[in-house]
Image (tube, rainbow over all chains, first blue to last red; front, side, top):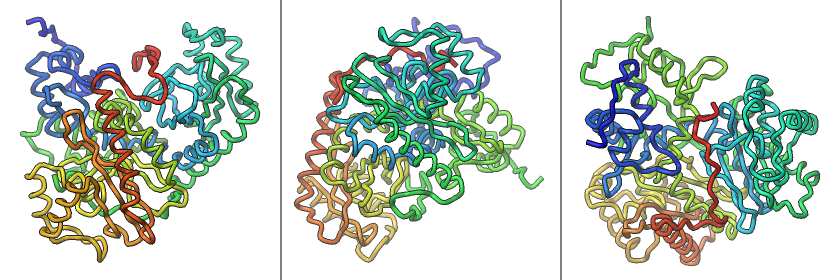
Length: 277
Length: 277
């Protein structure tokens, strides 16, 4: 029984075990067999089997034609209620689309989660410079435009944590010296935008600006990523800052109960989720 | 103790209770107090409190400044691995963007979940006709273009279920007669696209086409929603069908391990989720 694993963990609650099953899935392996699932969640096969059946019944997991497990649409539906994911994305989307339409470059929206950034939305131009991002994917803070904005406005404890880590060098231009980074972060706060020039890939330059919530806290960042060759960051900054201000305004209006939408708000016809399943 | 509720449900497993807590959140109320959460999940306050603390610690829930609970970013990250959600959306996005760029109308992507549709993506034009949709939101199948496509290709049991229900009349043009609907579904299969003309709102017309997986199963539908006045469905259909074929092709390439991307695929730098938290 090579798949059986020692799983005596009396301290772990059932809630933790259920969450461990969800956390077993990754971007690299979004589909898992039962034994993979059990191993990664550190559960015995019978326990994993029983729990997986419950998760499938609810729709948190689904099974493909070969019987492998994957994250289910119902979990995605529930998760789409996350204010920092889809809520932010919905408020931001019209402004991201405008930014895309006038530039046809890559447009990205990200938030901070711990000491990393998570991409919440991305629009990629057909001829735009290739970028390393995936919606729902994480990235280091110190190299990207959105990361520098979010780090510049993060609590001091987060800045200390990030600057205290060995920082990954993506290219010759990646800044990994904590002192130099602190100066860059001060510039970002002073200028109101961040520039990452060849710091993730040599051919890309990103200009990013902060988005604030109604309390004035920086909660997200928007960026434009263009080909580094010939790019004029100072000319791009007002464009990105305007989009960031638009999204900030939209978040304030949403909080005040006045959604800023391109389409007049209409009630969604009452359909209880699952009512017709 | 008005918030206390009888919660003796010996048959309900802990997994089911955890899932009930997640399902307590809705688009209309994405933020809940502890007592609201307990009531909706049918849990006692102390149990809800203990479980909520575990969910917050993991990141499945977050608390706002006022202490109210909401779906957390970490759950959204995990859910972004759902192949029928973000996986499909990523494969489709370049084609949706192209459709949007050449029309500047509303572009929608939907899948079937039980007897309803769920919107997976939407791009809304600035001057496009207002539509009733939300990413992650559900809608009835019988009235919309994407719904008619997905219903036309659904298993017979699902068609029977939907046609056996009292069908909601959104406008004077909504088809609610099962016999007439069956004829429409046959047309959708024969023509390879569906038209919903004023059947959800009188001012909107939608043209939708099916997307198939590598096994030839219809797994999603894409639509263009335009102002009904002056619209020429037969002229729009080839556009939408071309986008649907492009997405079908991208899904096939992804399944074969050859991602179809506008940007050359590059490895995302290895960052274990949570590694830097």
